[in-house]
Image (cartoon, rainbow, N blue to C red; front, side, top):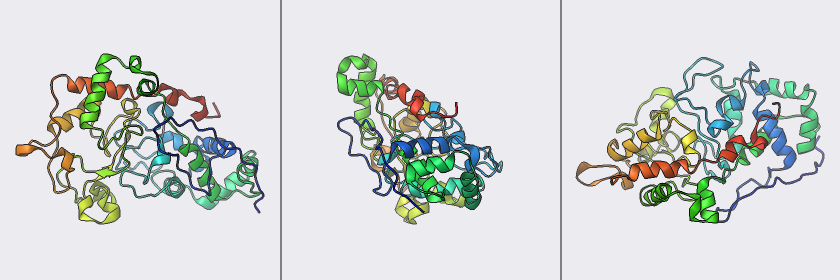
Length: 332
């Protein structure tokens, strides 16, 4: 039976110029919900073997990615087919996963917890463990006013924590707010290179358009392996125009979240820029912005532009985000 829990809203700090914050009306972020979600995020009780937590794959110091090209499951030993995405400003995302297969965080949480290669947890067993726990019933009561822990509130609490992982405190943000001295000359040149070549997909502010694009990393996308994971957004829409289209990742904290692309094929940002300069492969669904003249797809950088762009990308690192104690393991 649910009672009415007193809700104190979580204090978000969203800078000017960023669209309004998105959260569902039925799961507004509260201080109690956020703290419960944080505790659950770091607790291996969510996994079937009680050894794997959300934080096993989403590491704060790596912008909540994991630094691995393709992760081997800590539960089954199976190699997973995609890299772990970062958890940065997810509140604005219209779809989650590399192909947008999940509409929002509340729908997301059940899949990795139950998946045999991720956390392999039976939801009824999880509810029993949480209800028998010394602290969790009290924490769920405080956050949701419920006398019994049920999985929907587990999902809601985790969603509140992840939705509150906001990153807007980089040198770039200081440059926008305080003026030109926050970036050096090379970084400011790189900012101009970014605006000329990258901003149409990595839109300024959030540094993603939250859309899907084929950026030419392959020329063929009709592989049937791994349940069609290498088909891109087509796997979800079954529209042939979506072959090879993947979610635009944010450039925020990009220097911390290597390797890059959905399958981690590029180990460094230098390799990523080399791809855009001379490695873009043609296909029917290649993004028009990467189609070049006379067969020269990609971006034609002038001398010094790649180095300047790299400097600017590194200025998007938010050290406060990856060290913020409010986002860290509460059991440490």
